Amino acid sequence: MARWQPGAKQRLVVAAVDLFAEQGYDATTVAQIAERAGVTKSTFFRHFSDKRELLVAGQETLSRLLAEGITEAPASASPLEAVAAGLDRASSSMGPANRELGPRLKAAVAASTELQERDALKSVGLAAAMTAALLARGVPDPTAHLAAELGVLAFKRGFAQWSDGDRDDGKGLAQHALAALDDLRAATASLG
Image (tube, one colour):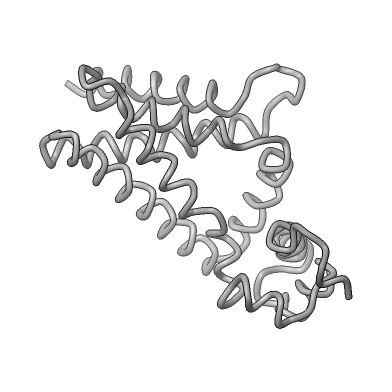
């Protein structure tokens, strides 16, 4: 096995998502994932503690980028404008590989209760990172939590539209996520 080849972590994620979609999460073993990715089991465990962790690969980076975008937003930015800056920062870092993986990941998550739970925890982590960044800007607690939750929802909606949509539309994830945030902002105004 070619342990020295770069990109082992990404190959493991792709292999796992493909196997989860093909044969189900429960039927997929770490050995199968490692073999499909062209690495050893020990290489798998250098990157992930178990197969559930594959779903949240990149969560720390995504959380950091969201928080950095919020932190670096102009001081005059409203809470949702700061969230938009975070979405733009994080979304701009995602490229074609993320887009290609999206539909397969969605199918794998939909087919497994355990992966759905893990996905929910990922959303909680992203919201917590954005909430903390908003609180550090002096945004009041309830407002920070609401803005962060809207940010997570906008990111998820934008990612779904981007990964499932027309590959030739010329729009990046950031455009989809920001449009989703605008839609959510309008929807909150209608709540009364």
